[in-house]
Image (cartoon, rainbow, N blue to C red; front, top):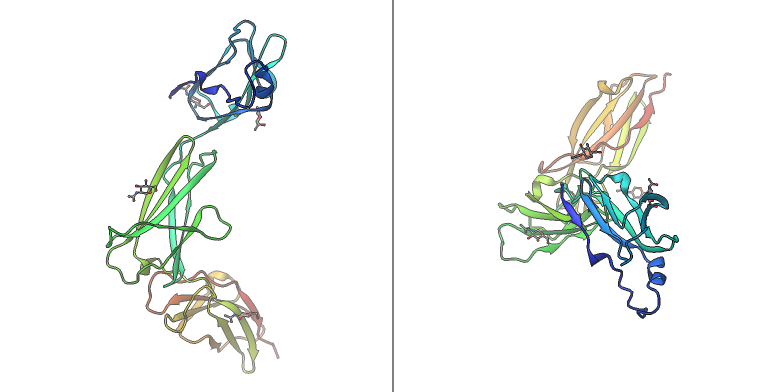
Length: 301
Ligand SMILES: *[C@@H]1O[C@H](CO)[C@@H](O)[C@H](O)[C@H]1NC(C)=O
Ligand SMILES: *[C@@H]1O[C@H](CO)[C@@H](O)[C@H](O)[C@H]1NC(C)=O
Ligand SMILES: *[C@@H]1O[C@H](CO)[C@@H](O)[C@H](O)[C@H]1NC(C)=O
Ligand SMILES: *[C@@H]1O[C@H](CO)[C@@H](O)[C@H](O)[C@H]1NC(C)=O
């Protein structure tokens, strides 16, 4: 538990107003933001010289008849606006108390759906610090310690995701991803070392189509994941999974180097569900997630 005693620090910079104009005008309209760790002991003195009859209110309801606001073992429920008032009710000071935690070390996950062009890292914070938090994400090659760190640029809509570009392939030393979370109460860093080839994971194949063919056969076709930049020089191979009835009876076939195959020896009247997964041809990293199942029924006649 930490003791936080705030002295004159809370005086609002009322620069635009002269001294003889009552400072109330400014303080009425401005709220001082204060960031405090859950569990702290907080004391905030009301900044008025007058000590008698000063009151503190929390979210507009009466809290203390004292010039010093004193809160022990502060919790998330104590977040809100604290105001101190003169005996006649005039507000003197407003403080918005923001409660939360210093960031924990981020949990990181990096993968490459676009080998060898780029990789993506995403991260989460557990527990959630509940305060506005920003991130500094960089990476550098371990085998080249003199090289400066690269900024990891934000990727897509996600705030906690960024893209690593121009990574070298077949490096013997890992690349170091450095993610630092920063908020008003502190900061925390995680260094995540990885070998580019180990984190390859394509996106699932697209445009899966299944056509019924004479002789109780199904012709299955698909396209490579569009995020995979160069299927010619960095080919993919594919596994086909199909089931009827219960999904846990699924069988897998492959790998296939082409973008189509024929399922044979099927049974009339059954509906088959087909999914495809892509993997780097040289077996780097992991296979993709399965594409969504496509169903097709073998005619009974
Ligand atoms: C502080 O509050 C928390 C949650 O309300 C409680 O679990 C904890 O025991 C308290 N600690 C002290 C020292 O009072
Ligand atoms: C106090 O006000 C803040 C900000 O409007 C709000 O988030 C909080 O839930 C309120 N707390 C209580 C106990 O009314
Ligand atoms: C990680 O990044 C932070 C923030 O930029 C920096 O202060 C720290 O020195 C870096 N750590 C390493 C090991 O590169
Ligand atoms: C998938 O289908 C869309 C729309 O028909 C087409 O534009 C796209 O080129 C196809 N992608 C692949 C990889 O076959």
